[in-house]
Each structure stands twice: as structure tokens, then as C-alpha cells.
Image (cartoon, rainbow, N blue to C red; front, side, top):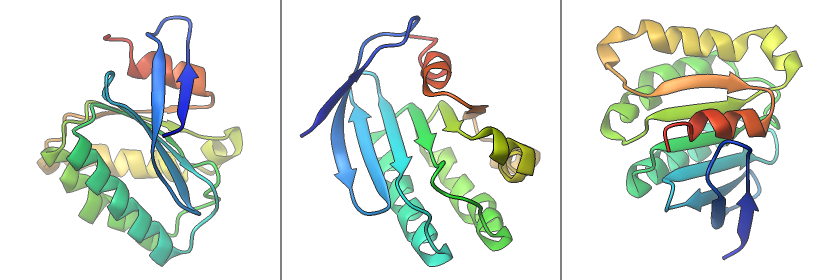
Length: 152
């Protein structure tokens, strides 16, 4: 397994191990910190996005991680159908997970397009899900990791 070590000013030492890798995503895990890092490597078509995201949901449930850092900056946009699918079909899985915090890296341009802000807003409005997971957006990895691991 490939290891990647990261240190942020206010967080513990992170020692990632490669968990999974394919043409769309690289998944790294630090089981000691219960931290998952997912980097999307290329823009997927809708069917590919859904298949990969279902795999990710399975990884979150199987590993029982508490913290998830997502770097989907290679995804240029999400079709409206995929946005709705995330809210309707994938968000309920969070109720079954141990996930406490989800940090998503975004570009300044994607914040201006507001698609992810709309998705998170719709997720928060879906009160019947009773999801305990906190969601935040970040433009840099260090700030995201600091927020994710602030309680450790």
C-alpha cells in the first residue's frame, strides 16, 4: 500500500494508505484517525458518476469512517438528475454511517456556479433524513483537514 503523510498546523499527523484506485477515483484511508480522502481524477459521465459514488458509499459504510475529505475538482459539473439522485438515493445512506464531518474541496469558479451550494442547501432542507453529518466547502486542503480533525 502506498502511504501519504500530511501535516496541517493544528491537526495530528495523517498517515494515508491507498485503499482503492481506478481511472476515476483514488481513495486513501487513515484508519487510526478514521479519515477517508477521495480524489476524483477525471470528469465522469452520469452513469460512471453514479457507479463510483455508490462504491464510495459502500466504502464509507464498510470502513465506518468519521471524517471524509472529498476532492471532486476534476468533476466540471453535475447534471440536475445526478444532483437529485445524490439527495434522494445517496443521502439516506448517511443515516447508516458513522460519518460526522464531510469536507469538500471546490474551486472558486465552482462556488460562483453555486451547484454544490444548491445540493448542500437541498440536503439541509431534507429534515426527515435526520443526518448528523456536518458539511463544509473549502478552497484548500489544509483548511479542510484542520476543520475535519479539529475535535481530535
